[in-house]
Image (cartoon, rainbow, N blue to C red; front, side):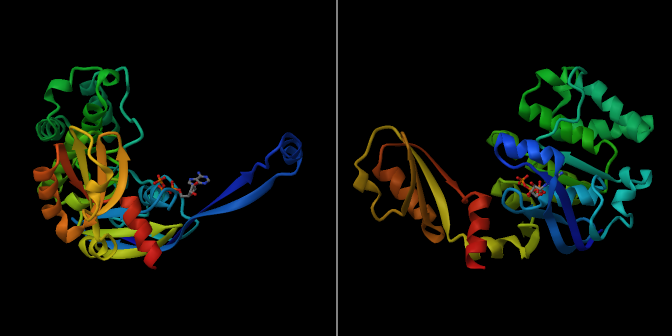
Length: 322
Ligand SMILES: Nc1ncnc2c1ncn2[C@@H]1O[C@H](COP(=O)(O)OP(=O)(O)OP(=O)(O)O)[C@@H](O)[C@H]1O
């Protein structure tokens, strides 16, 4: 159970004016500004629910996750996770949560993954039996058996991310915070992480709060989303309702084998981008299949992919309508 009430986090930062003279003067008279990263955010997540946490860059997602895991002390408001106050950082709390940040590396680079896991085992004081069974389960689910003896630094990004997830879950946390867990992964890597997270949630009933820029992650895993912008919570509810209401289009990305005249695209949707042989059309949601079929039968098409617009675009549409 996660309970957040009127959470605020402000940062006081030193303002550096442009120009050498102004910078020198600022050495003696420091000016500060307050960054309101999170402002009066409230929500509750019941045990076992998977919730997507969306918002544009700088919206306050990571700051919120840091407050929920106790890495930051809230400026105001209250946060309770599993009945604990996160910033007290009690051992009993830390043993039951995990924070995975896609852009951070928590494993020791020079160690083989198996040894890096042993470090986590020591940190969490896991007994041999539960550790072995958690490792065996995670190694199978994440398909990392063959990687365990390899040095972390030689792993590919996707392989390393799967090892990071294993390391973060060896102590079987009840609450999992994921900040961009599929960042930079290719399509297969993203799919592997999503499938794993879904299985893990189904097996252990873990509560999951997940941020991602890939709409696919969020649609695959979460029914409910929280949308934050400029530090404030703008939406808390059903993802499908949010997408339907604010993203009437899907993107059809066509890779051509040969050039086609520009007028080909007239009536097929809105031309969103042309990058060499790759053309992206924004088409009405309900007509996606029909238009993709028409493209395949009438044009020299090598490949067609259908996607939802990036989360950022949907979020922007949400705020354009607000
Ligand atoms: N330690 C800090 N000191 C000063 N300002 C900070 C600090 N951490 C975050 N901020 C500011 O707070 C705001 C929210 O940042 P945060 O990292 O939470 O956003 P985010 O939603 O996670 O963005 P992104 O999707 O780009 O990771 C930003 O304006 C950021 O510059």
